Length: 186
Image (cartoon, rainbow, N blue to C red; front, side):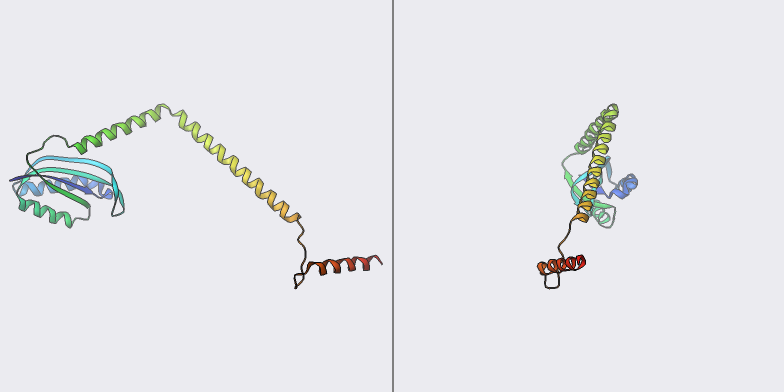
């Protein structure tokens, strides 16, 4: 029997079912006389690049001791399961029972996010003031834009455009207007 580490990514929509999926594959290995050395639900992590339009996935890790035939049947079941985005099966030289480095890293990342969140709660007034300043500055800009639009409409109504006849000759139109004025005076 050989030692294997199996890591597979579960679709983020199936996050609630990830524990059931992990148990299903563990049971499949146990039913064929394999042993489970380590089983981890690592959790949701950001992917390096989108996989099937997903930017995050739930990571699951299993360390097993079994025959290669059992691994082949696992590969087949991974292929036909739509919830599994990707999988990786690595043969190991010895049994690993300690928490994986991926799980440790995820826990460390979670602790730093928790610390950042707690710090933001302590400084609760700072975010509120920042949002007030942002709202105030955007309303000022909107008011200025409305005033400029009103001014441009007022000036456009006051400008006199020269009248053109069909030939586009402005001088003839002016001459006609002057002659009409002269006729009105007499």
